[in-house]
Image (cartoon, rainbow, N blue to C red; front, side, top):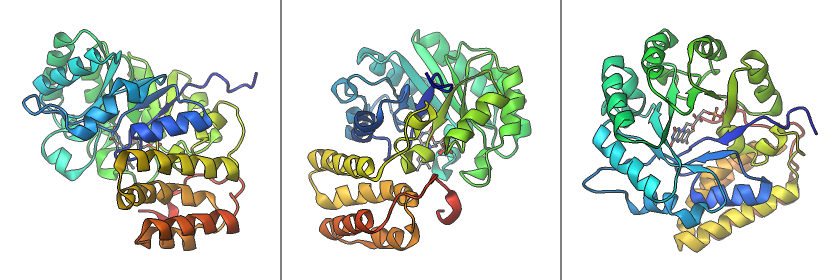
Length: 328
Ligand SMILES: Cc1cc2nc3c(=O)[nH]c(=O)nc-3n(C[C@H](O)[C@H](O)[C@H](O)COP(=O)(O)O)c2cc1C
């Protein structure tokens, strides 16, 4: 047994990337994550879930995987409605998103916007924890503009039986830029009363080990962009083999096939695959040239011939991992 065999690894929620088709394909090709979080669902109690959201939580689509529906709302009534709907479909846990940095979300005081006023957050949590008897986990950031906000936020969170608290170690203002603030995470960990999941810039095995060494109380690590770049990252963190080009080819083909079955239009499939390739292209020895070509492709057949050429002409670079260097 390898020393890091027991590292618990979650796949982060990522809008339009970690869809049910992606989750199934990634699990089938590389072994399942310990948990997958759906991209956020934004329910409204009078309108329910939309078609896309329903597909994410359809039990058949998540068969055999531990999937946690993530809910983004500032209305306790909407949260409770959605949590109960998830529960009816057999989900044992739902996740509350209080970390989304998007301008439109924050301006409605949702996502990271909920971190602005700890008193309001307290009232919201009081309502959802008293109205729902299933497990609720929470995904947060360290604050809106400064990690100094976090002690007050944590004091509120500590009052509730949160199943697990995932901390993306950045403030809202940082979006996804700069380095994750692992020091503030360490400080937060000392005061948190619930199990903690670390998130932010875990792009390789070393990153995961470092977090667990520095903060042994960390129950699990959650990987987002790193897993989008290298779909075998979780296997590697658990002590398994590095990705091969053949494996990546098979994964990409399966993923595109899955989208073709569900989306029906090749243009839409191309759009989706472009989002994945934005990350995956970084694995290759000469990514820049292909990145631009892939991004600019107009038709699916053209896109696929670039992919074919990339696989033919380039190798996976040794030690390749996500790096935000040339991506916004
Ligand atoms: C394109 C994109 C979409 C995302 N969508 C969500 C989401 O739906 N819910 C959520 O909680 N976080 C979302 N995130 C944040 C990720 O879950 C994660 O917290 C972030 O990428 C940092 O982790 P990483 O450094 O491992 O990528 C998204 C991030 C990106 C880049």
